[in-house]
Image (tube, rainbow, N blue to C red; front, side, top):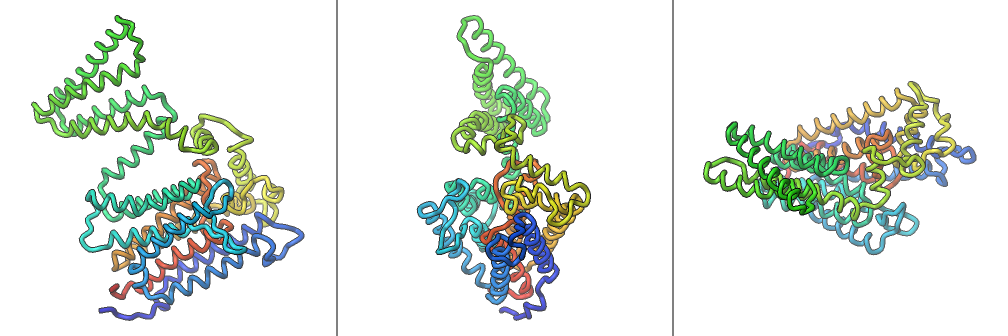
Length: 474
């Protein structure tokens, strides 16, 4: 049974108003970023700011159409939409146009469209559809595999397009899984992998191994609280290291100290397993597998870093980690962005008065680096206001997601929040040098039709579901 309600009276107009504020602010800042004194009209279609108003008008029309569509359409056709987008991503790999090194655009007449932007919507819908299905238990191996396929399939296809930034967005869906009760161990494992990856780039492998040994013994102590067993385990490891190191020196074998440690760990691990079976010590095998996995992962980081990342991506990561300096190369955009933001001071230089902006010191200033325009012309006060609006916007979306009666709507809502949160955080972070530059737009601000339409559709599907939250989904 489904109860009809007047959706127009139930629309969250406050969220719609925030959306309009963000879009209008974005349009004004695009105008400031690419201002042309010969074409001063903000409606000039030969300029980016003129083209953006066309995309904004199109977005408004699409938002209206979304409200007209019945809410049952979204869960019912979620997999179908997902399939279409996957097909489009495959087509891009074959017939796509390369822009800034990424083959992620399809040309249709005089228009270009980026399917990877719309893939986020399809993934959010498909993930919500699967998780809200009957008899789905999230913390099972079968569910983990299916969830991984839903999220990683589009991410992998986008990665093949050489669009690493857009591919990384899909890892934000972990927030949806966290809300729906995924095992905290999975989240901790993911966090540990990220930390270990960074440490493997910064520290020597031997240092990481020694830190890992210390961490494993600390965890072992907390799990068992048996001082004698922990002391015995540590003694066995130290003894094996001493013996192997002594033999290596005595017979001039030539093993490095790192290799000596690895051999000692292998022998000690075998002894630990025997002792664990005899004394019924819990979690030893799991800890050993975790430790061995850490070692293998640490040794694979350099291979992945050197062979799977582009040279400019390697440099961006090294620059952020302080391992390399390239002020006239990969650091140039960020340095100019920070100069522009810093030069704005507290209240900014004023609208259309930004010198860094006016003389095009910051590349991609109307797209990926639009935030520095705000900083230069509106100052710290302006950037603080924009961050506040985005924060309040995300807060409203959390409130909307939590009040849904349908599990599909709630899960989709957190999918929307995940994508927007990732984009906002990473884009602002990269303009001020806190994270590597990965080339993703600031929602509703950056110039571009595909991103604006995708973010609008993503948001208004949630608002449409929310407007009918008092109805019962079939």
